[in-house]
Every structure is written in C-alpha cells, then in structure tokens.
Length: 444
Image 1: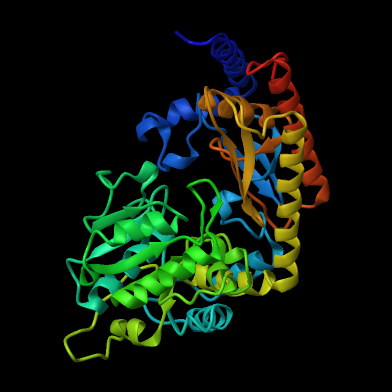
Image 2 (image 1 turned 30 degrees about the horizontal axis):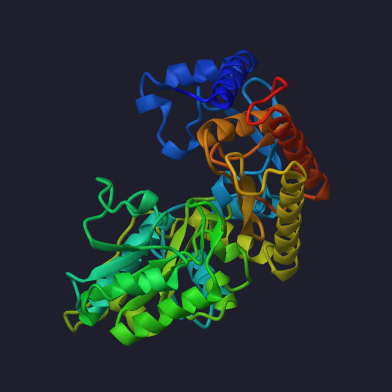
C-alpha cells in the first residue's frame, strides 16, 4: 500500500498533469499527429516527456518558444550541443558563407582541414590525428573498433562503467550489459569512480583479455557524476600495464576545460572522442589520439592492417564551417565564465535545498551534482520518480526548461539573472516539499 506521503505526491502530480495538458493544447495536438507516423510520436527517446513533450517553434540565445506561445529559459541547451546558445550570429554567418559556395562536394573541402587543425591544436598533445563522424555515438563505436584492432585482441573485453553512456548503442544503465541495443562486444562492467571495485573486476580476467577501457571523465547521462583524478589515473595505469587502449569519452566533458577534462585532471588517454558543441550545433562527432593508432585509418596504408571509415556526411560543409567558428567562439575566457556560472548555480541550488533540510539522509533527499556548466538534479529515496516529475513541471511553470530527468546544461548566453531565477524556482519547490512532509501543499 502506498504511504500517505506517496499518495499525496501522486495526487499533486495528477493535478499538475491536467494543468499541463490544459496549458499546452497545441503541443498535445502536435504529439497526437506525430503518433500516426512515429512510434510514440518520437524519433529520439530522450526528448519524450509525460504526458507529451513540448513542441518548440523558435529559439534565440538562451530562450525557447513553444507552439502555444510559452517562453522558457533553456537550461538544457540541446543536451549540451547548444553550448553557443541558439542562433549564434558568428556560427550562422560561417554557415551562410560556406553554403554560398555549395554543399557536400563528394570530396575534400577547405573547412575540414581547418577544423582538423583547430581540433588537434585544442586537444593536443593527445589529439595528434583526428577523424570526423556524424555523432558521438559513431565516434565511440569507431574508437572501440580501432582499439580492438590495434591491440590484435578482436575478441578482447572492453571495460565500461555502470550508468555510463557513450551513445545509443553503448549505454549501461544500472550496470546492465544485456540491453538488446548494445553493440555485440564483450563488455565488462565495473563500478564508476571506485578503484577497489574496478580492480576486482579487472582481476577477474587475465591481462591479455582486455582490449580497451572506455570512460567518461564525468558521467553525463548517468547524472553528472565526476570521476576523481585518482580514479582516471588508476585506469591509465591499468590500461598501460595490460597493453590495452584507454579511451576517454569527452563528447560532453570537452567543454569543461580548454583541452578536455581528462587532460585537465592529468590523464593522457590513447584516444578521445568528441561531439556535441564542437559542431556549432550541427550534427558532429570526432575521434582521435595517438598517431600510430590513428594511422590505421590512412587509406594509403598497404600492409594489410589498415582500417576503413566511410560516411557520406563526415565532412559535410555545414558542420565543418560551423565547427571552425565554434572553436573560435568558445575560447578560454568564455569557457571560464560559463563554467563559473554553472558552479554558482550548483552552489545556489544546494544551499536552497539545504535550508529546506532536503540534502541530508532520508526519504526526501535531493541535491545537485556536476561540474562547471554540466549539472544534474538528484532525488533519492521513496517516491523519487514522482518528486522528479513534480520538480520538472514546477520549473516549467516558472519559465525554466531542463531535461525531465533533471539534467542541466548551461550555454554562453546564460547570465547571473538566469541563474538567480533558476535558484529561486528551486527554493520555492524545496519549501513546498519540506513544508508538506514529502507531499506538496501548494498547487504547482
């Protein structure tokens, strides 16, 4: 039987969902029409929301506008890809200039060479050579394949971590390596940021059974959980000792330090993967690293060990031009400002939750984790899913958009006023939660 607080929460959520439907009739209609041709009205699982997602029709800077005319401060920023905000003038001009000469030539173009140079400069010394893909998923798929080929351990195991996410075909929610969507590698799942637990997993196999280690310096989709420098250095040491390849997935975390978070923490990976913001908001992915590994992809190689990597849109003019400008826009001063703003947001949120006595142990514990401009809200204990849903809908009523799961990504168009508004909304929610003993007194 549900607890009294659980029943109160569910009643509050039921009322909130009815209010949501009433407030967003055009989004509801758009969703119902989409169901006719898309399973669940959706072609991207993560953007679904209950009872239906909002349909957006315009974006500018840090703002979004829906089909129903509601406006929001965008604290999701296209799941980190819109780091430069919406409709960045410099990126738009770069794209327009490139398109004025045509697009997708079926051969090399000047923009890919420039972008490759900029990426290698930015993420050196690890990134000695780079190749482009269309997504972070592709980048990680190819990095793992290259690692296995370079070690000669084609049947070797790949060490990954519980709650890790490296794309739609490489995800380990709840430590599960049996998802039917997973690529058919031999995955070895260890506890994240746990040296002793990971050592125990590694000691269960012989040294020559390990082909690669794939790790996020901070788990993004897993809840913005940072790894310690000691943990990453331990992985570096184990990969070296076992003759395996260390791959750092910096698809999200590359924004947190000028040359990526792993290098900032003193770890030199063999390969790193990139994506999201570096394409300037366009479809983008990349992988690169040590020269001897990346030279396996040299098409002039004739020793029988070469690897092929095709892709119609790998060097598409739009992404290449946008990426060149994105790396110039997001320089050190801009990076430091947005990451500092994110730290202030996290501190403000956790202070508001602490004042409401919601950050301690117990059935209503909630807190914000993360680093810099990548953050996540957590709701632990009983009725956590209901409280998370109530939180998301509450933030919408205050004009703030974030991921339903609580993920937050700042962009360069955010300012202190936006942060203050976010913290104020969280403070209101915390007071309501604390004042009702797990339930919600006020109508959200």
